[in-house]
Length: 347
Image 1 (cartoon, one colour):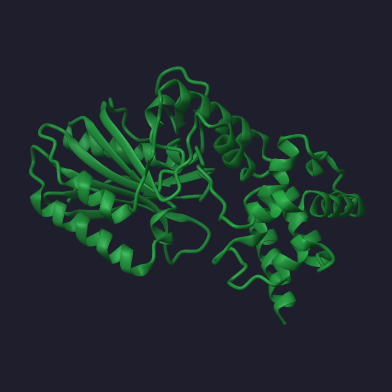
Image 2: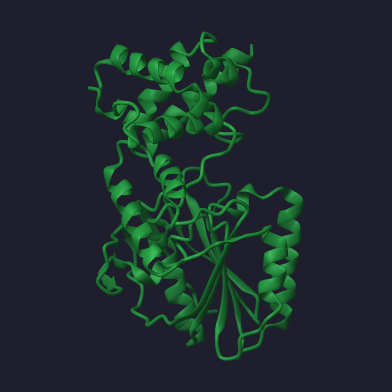
């Protein structure tokens, strides 16, 4: 029965990859669902997986896809993504060979969950930051939870087109999501301090960490690969660093300091939902307590891009203290391909 659960997990992931624009990763997952067996150590490990194999659990299909992609990036195997879509046998043979001859590397990669840092989410977050700047008229102090390699911690170093708005300086990273709704007002944003935390942060200056991050970008999504590589170069140029820390402890430390004349922005994108319920509650309490100490001269804002009860997209929500008012200001594709913008409605 467990073999059937594993097969189903690969098929569920395949459907998700289809919807998110990666037909190759979908093909790879379907090939594994149809033909993965216990003849290799990797197959035995996956088919005997002790926990939830699927996307809502341990994401084993994406762990495996990332391991194979890393081998292709390192030129240890021929890129399976180059195999014609109609040649399913060739795809399976390429994967089967990798499972057999690179088992040690793949087994090691299977031990840890996928890590991503989707740069296009900066285009989802930027209109929120523009709203905060407009509402407060103050420079920003940034605190990002679940920052991974910190690529969305440097959102102000990219260039954007949001509807009719062009924003940002010249940059190797240009973000132009499909825009629905009104165009945000142009606001100047000044970032006076930035910091991020992650339980397992990736260092942009580390070749191993860069490989890990790139390997979890789906192999047939060339634009994402190029964008991630460019964002990593910018991060290295600026010495970007993400702290290794528990989210709640880190927030307590960050929120203990008030910044007169600036707005402290706590934000996260598709990260908060992965915290255990107890940590979520503790984190909410820490942020709410800091909100009680916020003043008009030192306001606090929380910007979120997280899944909610509406399937297929993430809610963009903004809360600002000292009033504590909270609004859903838009929705977006999880990879930032489109943004449906509503904006902050004045009461």
